[in-house]
Image (cartoon, rainbow, N blue to C red; front, side):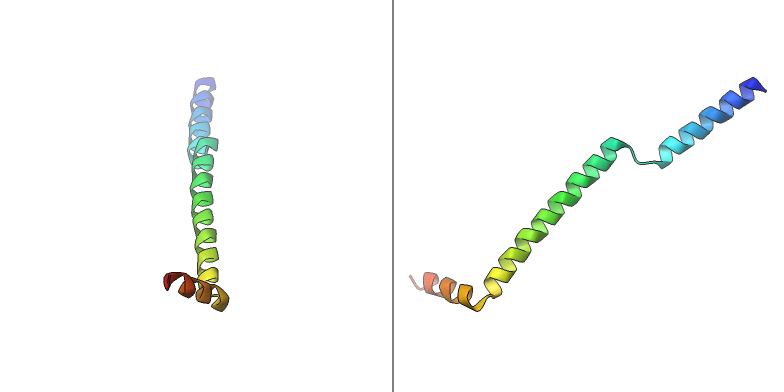
Length: 65
């Protein structure tokens, strides 16, 4: 009985550890999400800047030089 309990306990712990996200995997995923978020923020700032009529006139004026 004691042996069976030990084996069952180890199997349960292995199963639980495989189901949960490890700290390393979470940090790798978090860095990837942060990089995507930074890219989207920069893209949004560029888009809003270029869609601004005042900025469009400034760019148009610079391109005529």
